[in-house]
Image (cartoon, rainbow, N blue to C red; front, side, top):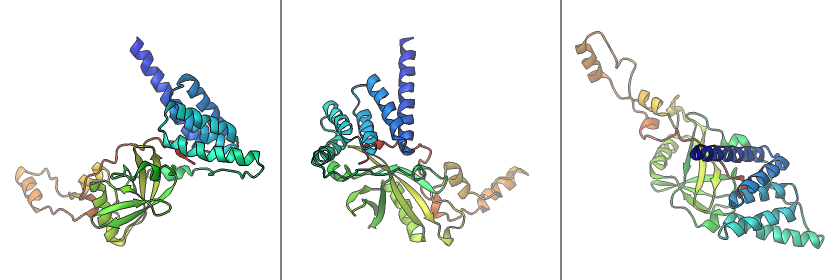
Length: 274
């Protein structure tokens, strides 16, 4: 019975977190602040909730309260770079406000469409060979990043052309080949914290040479790309064997590497936004 109650509590917690993130995506900051306060009341030792609250309050122009929220996040997790960054920013902002020289601080709404996956056109991944945490700290979900080919790998650069990390090798090789064919892509940050940086890659142009072949096929699409409709025949056992011998594997660059595209996007942590 106790185990069941614990599972229910965790499920309710995840649902509240997801709702808080969705409210932030819709720029419904007052509701997001209220919901994060509820989460803090139930789970007072989780810095992410304080960070999300700080973000919502900052967007509402309630800078002193936002500063206090980030200070609480640091109390719980003194090494939290997101809280450190925003606390320093808000401390100065409050000082300027008291001196009558403050300016409005806001990052604006995040476009939810940036995080929507499209079958065959998008892939989401965690970067490898990450840049130091202080270089990645300013990144927020929704920030546009750049893919840059370097030798046999694909680097990811930030808004100021700073190095952030690389695509993992298998996905990097696929993107390299697709770029060589003439495809074009954009990339956007979906989640960033002290140890992870996730992006979503989106096909914006498909080269004529690709035909109707997707950039990032599902497992079923990848299998179909290797076979013809005439491969499976049921007339006789002999005809079936001949069909397999005669069937040609179509050269499909988009199906040469297998990718795990079934894993859903991680929840973007809007507390990381500036």
